Length: 395
Image 1 (cartoon, rainbow, N blue to C red):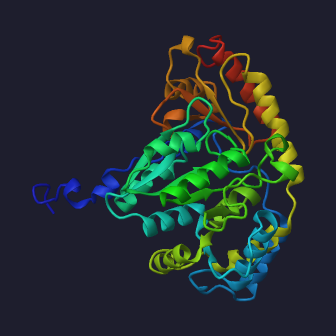
Image 2 (cartoon, one colour; image 1 turned 90 degrees about the vertical axis):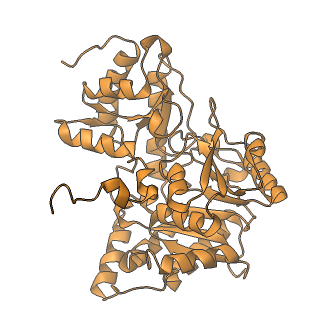
C-alpha cells in the first residue's frame, strides 16, 4: 500500500487507547534494562520466591491434566478456600446467599470487571490521588469519569474528603489501603466512616486490598486485625490477590468477593473477556491461604524503618503502615520535579518511579524496599546524597 493510501492511524485507533497513557512504571523497567548493575528500587513486587507448596500444587495440577477451562467464576475448591478465609479475617458467613466470590486474572482483572459492571459512559467513580496506575485508566476503558480525591499531605482517603465529590452520577468509590504508592493504611474508624458515607448516598464501595497481608504491627487494629471497610460488611466489594502476597505476580491470580448481584455481573463479563483465571494456577494458590508471612513481614518492617531513618533528615516522608513502598517529597530547595529527580537518580544507577506517574502532582517519588537489604543500603546512600544536593553527576 502506498503512503498516500495508508490510513491515518488516529482514524483507526479508538479514543479509548488514544486517551490512555502508557504506565510510567514501564519506563522504569526500560531504564533498568539499559543500565549495567542497576540499583532497582522501582520494583512493585516481593523479592522472595514463590513458596514451595504453591509451586508443587501448580505443578501437580499441570501433571494431573487440570489444564482446561474452569468455570468463569473459578474452581470450587479455591472459591471455598476464599470464603473460609474471609470468614476468618472479615467475619463473613461463607454460606450467605447474598455474597459471592469470583476468581479473576489478577486484581487488575477484578478492578476492570467491577468498573465495567458499574459504569456507563458519563458515570463517575471516585479514586484516591495518589492512585495505583490502573485507576484513572478505568475511565477510558469504560467511558466513565474517574474523579480524583486529593489526599495530600497525609494520603488518607477519608469520608470528609470524599463526601463533596459525590454527585448523582457517582457509582462507586474506590479505596486502597494499604495504598500504592504511599503505603498508607487507614484505621478502622476511617474505613467505617467511608463505608457509612457510601451506604447513605447509595454508592458502591470497592476496596482494593491487594496488600492485605503486608500491614505492619503499628497499623493493625484492635486485636491485631487488618483494618478493612468490609469487616462484618459483605455489601462492600473486596478485591484481593495472590501475586503480591506470595511472590507470584506473573501467575495473574486475584479474586473479588461481595454482593452477589454485583459478582454475578462480573462473572458474566469475565466469560466474554478473560474467560477464566489460569486453571492450574488456581489449584496452585489454594495452599496460600493457610500460610504465614510473619517472617517476610518482619523483614519489610525492618527495611521500612531503615528507609525512614535514612531519608527523613533530608525530606518529608510519611511512615507507611503497610505494603513495601515509601513515597517521599523532593525537597523544594533542589528545584526538581519528581521526574527530574528520578532522572538524576538514574545517573547513579538508582531506579525509582516519579510521583507524577501516580498523581496529578509530580512532587514526590516512590521507592520500593522489596529488595535485599544490601541493595537497599546502596541505594539509600545515593539518595541521601542526592536529597542533600551533594551528588551532581555519575562517577
